[in-house]
Length: 297
Ligand code: MG
Image 1: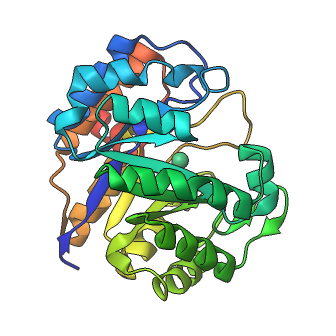
Image 2: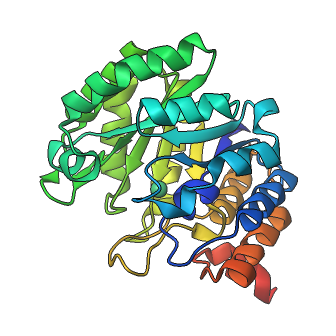
């Protein structure tokens, strides 16, 4: 396999949003600059969501200004509503992400509405963002399993993907929220969604709860997905939420992709420096096997 795979580094947002301790704005800025230095060209800088619910993301505007997000089309921020879009635009965001799920039970608990209602709510927001020339990603959570309703049908994911596409999302990120699926189930979802959305507009967003993260990334890439989300060190687990494992680690994904013959433009030593910073300055415990192996080598 050859060609390029784009890594979307989600550590600064998805990785830190549930961090157990307060994080200095300066540390978030430093993390972004270390990731950039490692060659990361697309990254989730932060989120404009309720600071009461997600206090770690409260100063995202300041982070964006400090890291020059106005000039970086690859810098993305997550938003939850119109107010979030207002803030994103105010700080010059070039890319935003909106989020829903493939399971009503999950959507109701996580975002307080059914999937259909969340799509209705996001449609005018996406349209406004597009009018402002902003790239929009649509996240779909629970693509294979819902913690409340059990297994999710691939067709349910396809239908949500189609709705996000119809409202103007340029990219659909498939979130395997629980990190429980095996590659055959990932293949079923990717195949179903690919009948509605071109593969070059699909991103894989996997977690490592059951140790299936890399195998699932490999399967998505084998099927033609060329955008993969990952977090330096495997950031993202929350010690106060048993069962919530981190994102697949950027080091592990990059190591595997380079070995398979793909280019990512990312320097492993650079990611290692970012992970080391998270470990030493933020108290994060890295889960990346490649990080651990490099430390010993
Ligand atoms: Mg994640």
